Image 1 (cartoon, chains in turn orange, cyan):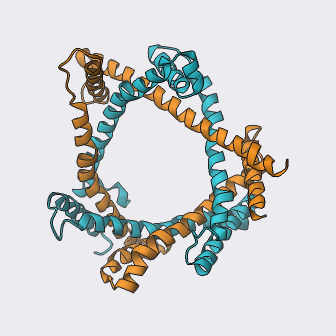
Image 2 (image 1 turned 180 degrees about the vertical axis):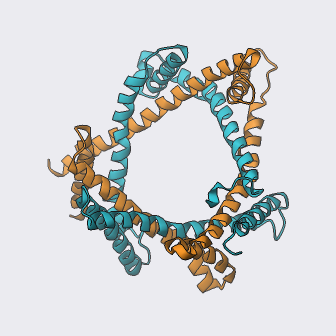
Image 3 (image 1 turned 45 degrees about the vertical axis):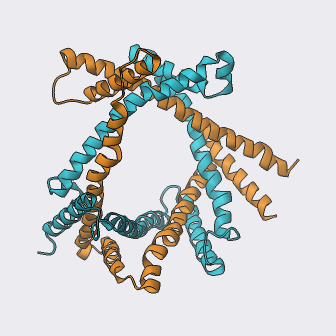
Length: 205
Length: 212
């Protein structure tokens, strides 16, 4: 019974949202506000269940890991934004998290992206086959795309030609990404229509 | 003294440098610092969730109090929020975890959040299509390339593409793996080089906008 009620709720909310295709209306606004409220509550509970409790409270209480009082302190002073007279304290927490992010930004950018991507770009171009042609195209595409985003010098002459070719590669990439995104959205749409046709109407007929 | 920006700048500098040093010295005590820092980062970020929720609920509470336009919908938002939070607390007390399969919290997730989320995203299919109709006019060679590539990728990903030509899915794969990959890689390298530069500026205290 609970499942059938759940299916009817889900179907109702689905139709409420699709009503926006006709025009903005109160049914859509109802579903939209409900979605925002429910999602905020969900993430609050999720943060408690998967971050605060297992990473902070349990280790302090059960394992006596008192070192965790430091992030707890920074977390609590983040909440001083509620009190204007001491809200400057929250800058310490922001500085701490920004410091971690910046540190990881340096090492993570180099190790996690720049070096592996460069390694994958420096490909062999020794043969006369299709694979070599593809490798050459990848190398050429990466370099010309980078040239397009190089703004320290005016795009004239060789630089201008390189930037133009880079633009062509970028357009192909955007077109491909767009097509890919559209297909992903359409597969979601098919999923919702399937739900309405078989799961929901299946409870009636 | 305590209110000055020098303290947060020093904190950022020390933490940033420790993170970099820990990367180059993978031995104790530096070796574990990256993992510990990520854990601490999650804990502090967890507290910021309270600020976000307070901001959202506070905004809608004020909307109801002042009876602003469409204030009735704000009641729905706050009611939805309270319903999930109460369900989460009850689920935790009753089953030990709000995420237990039998809890009402999981029921809300399955029959409220999942359909709402996927329908919201599927709605974009219509708007992307209508935006494409307006924007995809082959005014010049670049726009034509964008249009042609998008059409080929869309057709190559559905069965009808194979019916039109058995080479179409293969050509789609080639587009994704070669020219698309090349441009994506170039853009990515630009982004990460930029991120690297900004990170160094932040650690050295040149970039301070996050403190304002």
